Image 1 (cartoon, rainbow, N blue to C red):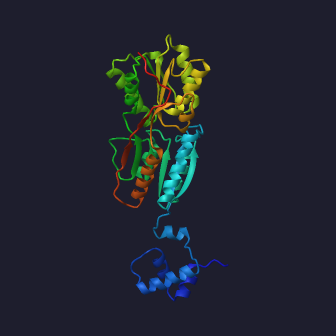
Image 2: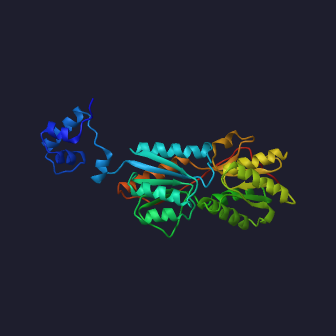
Image 3: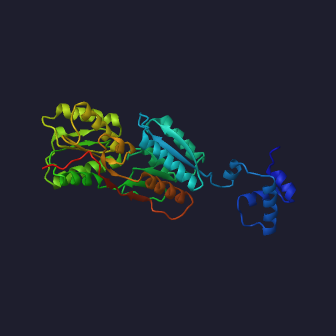
Length: 343
């Protein structure tokens, strides 16, 4: 069947092409009888206006961008893969399609220009970013240009603009981890941190330190190691801790579950029993944690709720509805078998 165009729709409805355009784009200055006649012809012939024409008329594209910043490593495990699913599902639930891309970093000019071009060509109505550092000139630039930007794990308390939408983990999870270990009787606690360019990693680190100081727990230099957000980085950090420490701790507080899985692997390889010799606790609620041997104790987050909040509020901003620009999601302690009471 030959594809029908707006000129044919106008001829069949007995109206001008501009009238068809006004009907399609929802303008109110069309008589009801005329609108009904045009819509009847449109339905009979299954006419769908071209997106390019709608964009020229000032209509939204109905598409969100989803940009994953991999920082040079394609980190794709059960947890991170779920992020894409949650964003896609929640966009679809709000009637939006998704245009997605993986970016090795945000410092490369080619990557920055690619993202800017997608925004400036209005291929998307707004963008969701995951994996960006907490200091991203590209996000600042897009926000300054008035683009709608939603960012996971990104917060600047001194910035409050209506087109920057963020969602974050609660700020005190690190302190809760140490409080929990102290409650089990631990006083020899090591810390394996995440990437300090990430807002959540920084706040968890601050929570670890503040709680250790509040409980008068010594901060041993050899028991404070920096890692990243991958299992491999946790494995390497734990090997470094075991090689450099004169004495091993009774517990290790790990900045994120992915790292914690690597820590468990390194301890198991070294013949160190969890939790009989060393307790291990993580943060996030990685799906693999429940199948770990022993299952991993963690402070868990509802990632579906997290991305539902980010996507729905970003779309609300696109559609010029009033919206809270920042939300913090609480954690829940999930006790399993990787920590024991001592003393």
